[in-house]
Image (tube, rainbow, N blue to C red; front, side, top):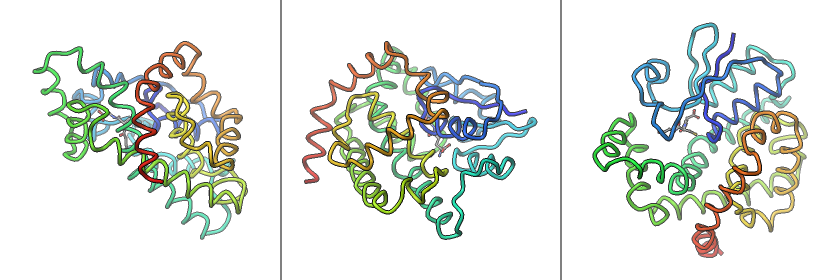
Length: 264
Ligand SMILES: N[C@@H](CCC(=O)N[C@@H](CS)C(=O)NCC(=O)O)C(=O)O
């Protein structure tokens, strides 16, 4: 039995849900309310000491870190395969997954936090907010979240995040000249890892980030057209949620543009 501790807007949980759907694996949803910091509760920290989603529990044993979970699912259910054929392409796939985990993911957090998490935390008293943030286990993440709560879109992390996104998109555009998907002609864990980070761009109405990259636009359309994307990501973004997120994204669009233009 597979259980997944997840949140609909978490891109690293979306990544795992895409992989579960691609492999048509049944799983039980355990919702973790991130805006209420349920991820920092003691019972959850016993499963995932880093206090983040996703966590996969397989027959009672936790597996953490979305990339590790994806490879674990690939290992236990190799068919249909989400690994390219050659060893070189597998290495390339892992490099993309690493890039997503270490660069794109924190960047996505820096863009989402001021618009989504910060308002929820601002409803708490300053004391409650501080106490919650102090509980974040890893120092770099804790400090980043504190900056994003204090400075919102003016935090230095936001400009860096836009630059990471743009450089990633330009790199993908180059790679997609050679093959249909990011590392080869077949959809792999690299595509499953990247796609959710484009949902963030879409939901906030910032698609001009890739409008000069037709191959990336086409790649994302093809990701969205997959059954796995529809049932694991798009289904959690009904029109009223999209409208709300669009409105939030619109407030930030001038900043996103400003940071994109600074790169030109
Ligand atoms: N490297 C981790 C990152 C997990 C992560 O940052 N998850 C976010 C949601 S996408 C989270 O749970 N954030 C809660 C928090 O930071 O308080 C993974 O890939 O699983």
